[in-house]
Length: 350
Ligand code: NAP
Image 1 (cartoon, rainbow, N blue to C red):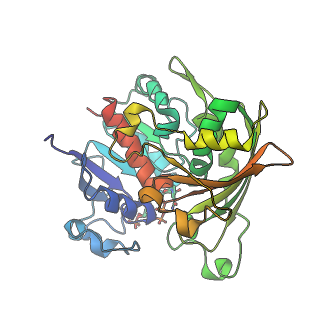
Image 2 (image 1 turned 120 degrees about the vertical axis):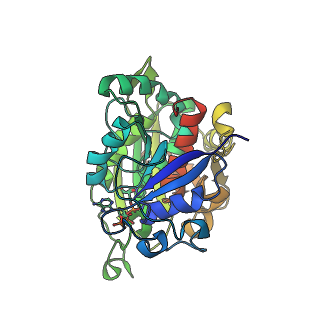
């Protein structure tokens, strides 16, 4: 058996960081060798530094691990970043410069030239821009990024529909879980008995990120998709799981039966489906009239599947549907782990 690859988690104490710890505790390829925190946490045992908020116990092997400061001298080859935006902006390039492969959940470099914005089932070929990234920036390491959690639940079903029918317009109304705001997140008096119709910066990410994800590669250059997207993003009193009501306009006429078939038939490319965290069929099409729902569907296939349903004709565009994605799993930590698995498989982690 190959020795596991040593990995570090940056911002290991937060909402996404705890997911990384939970998911990587028994990962077949990766071994957690460093848990990294802010000045507040560094030097403390992990169990003391973090307020564990996930179902189940903090994995006992990490309770006593001393949280490291944000140094670039970590005993790891991959770093998973759940850093806040401003910290990621400054530090992720330093980790790439120091030779680490950075798999980031932060938005700092999602729209940066030569940095893949990646969902392996959607655009694994975008990793071919990495040699350009290293050459342009002189990094022995690299950065890949995961999309915004809401965009993930939209781009996944759009991918097979775009391949089959050509997506032109997308209109989205999201109902996003509280955990998407981190901990402690939204004040209870703002979210209880309420819908909060504003998430700073969220609507602005939907169009550019979706265009990049569905874009094509011309040699090592990324050509963004030309679709137009508009989003209304709302925070709702759900703990985990982002729901999106999506309407799509296509280049050609599409029947509901054809669209349903295309979504059901969507499979990961053979290389991707062999990765430890991948599913052969990452989209689940729910036939019931009242599914998907966040409480019932967010954990589908260990939180890695995107569930869609309520496919019907749209009077404004062509097709309407509902999607549910687990925001801290597929939309954050699990997605970033799958990205790192792809990096290893493709030989980008020396
Ligand atoms: P969170 O629960 O608020 O946790 C914040 C984390 O950032 C903590 O681990 C904290 O460490 C660390 N931190 C804060 N200030 C720091 C500093 N100055 N230097 C180093 N570390 C610092 O946030 P989260 O929800 O996990 O989000 C983390 C990142 O993931 C953000 O960039 C977010 O946009 C992205 N993201 C989140 C979700 C989601 O659903 N929550 C989904 C996709 C992407 P200490 O505890 O040690 O202070």
